[in-house]
Length: 193
Image (cartoon, rainbow, N blue to C red; front, side, top):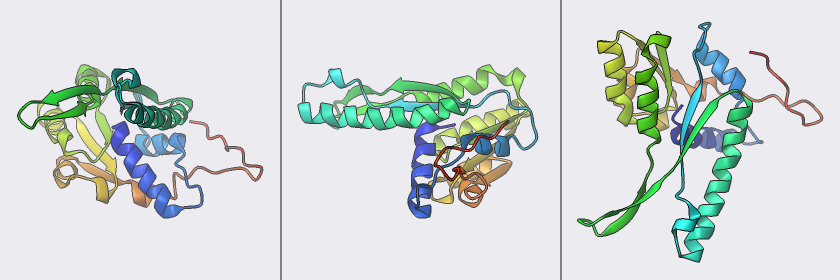
């Protein structure tokens, strides 16, 4: 799972569905497994830079707020059995453009995770819409004869990524099927995998 992309997609679905809509990650993972025995569900997520790395109080407050939101996003993933790999974005400077920017390495870690576990899976289901993964899907499919599938929403899906996959799961169309059911008293209903 490309955590940054997944977060954007699920936030958009929640905004459109309204009424406190949330995805039940266990249902979601079971659906994507599609009857197959999953090797693992791992989410790679970039966090804002360490707040201590800046001297600007306003920027530090924004970083702390964003990190707090991200950590709130990580907890349900972990409670659902998803392994989370979170990395701090680093502050870099581009002298040609004379500007500072941040860069995370979560996409690189996702690539590394997939390529180091080739012997353990036949099908990779990538939850992302990021076109940076096209080459990964092509390598897995063409060189290692792996089935590759992607899950995302059309609004956040690279056309090239969708074309590189053998199957596309439209998260928007699946959203009612993977909705988190709440018990009347507001407790989360459990789903056994």
